[in-house]
Length: 380
Image (cartoon, rainbow, N blue to C red; front, side, top):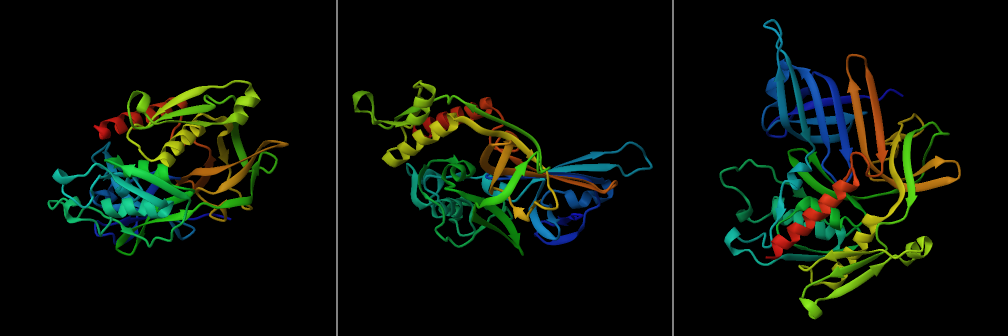
């Protein structure tokens, strides 16, 4: 089956205009992260990639991405040619990712409290933070009166989905909160008429979505079953010296299997809730595990296609070799197209090795360090 990719321009008032005369396109849809895109086209379309404009992308006539223009670049090589435009951008989730969660989202900057603590189902907590800080119903103090046209999102009704979570926000980036509290959900911002709608959706298990070299739908895979970097996490909560709240979380099965106990310390001095401290310890242990799929590149085939059999964030089964199976998530889907030769390639990826949250161990450690420093700064 030949798949059809169409890309339309979107004006600053979110109205769909005509198709863009793109020549090459690359679109990466990401789970729990802002998606990205880039196009090259004739410079005659330069007026439709100006500030405030955006794009609408459909695959087989189904919308898969809407988002703003962020980085148009012009090139011209002769007086007889209008030149070309290379333009890139994000999806509309960037509107949410650009904002911080204020301690007192309903108050002016000079009247901020110590923190904004929320608990409950993941969907309730996430939508509460998003609505209070970038939702259309947020307090007027969160808006810049000099930029009345700046985008906001309409938050879809809360259905109470996802596992129970807790979070205490104090100028944390909203995407950091979403990743910490996703509770098994995915998130999206989609254009619906003249509104940008933020919603969550439930990740699905797809037992029938199986990928292997033998089936012809697995291009490459890296996996490992290595000793974890930590088997025990000591979590430091509030307090000083002997009065400090200290808790321990452990993975005794790993310590027994490898015959070694390895400890790590997690500084959560700004967190007072015991369940949140335990969750931080569990997350630290999860971050240090080194077993499973590192990176897998899949092939889109007629029998098992993106959007027909599996989707972004879904859990699928990978057989890196006969007799070995892992279940992991579709973390990104990249679509590359060339209008001149008619090629269109869809490449889903499993694991966080590419197109995900952290590409390397060093990326993860830097992110952890930034979170620790940020938490310390916000506690002062």
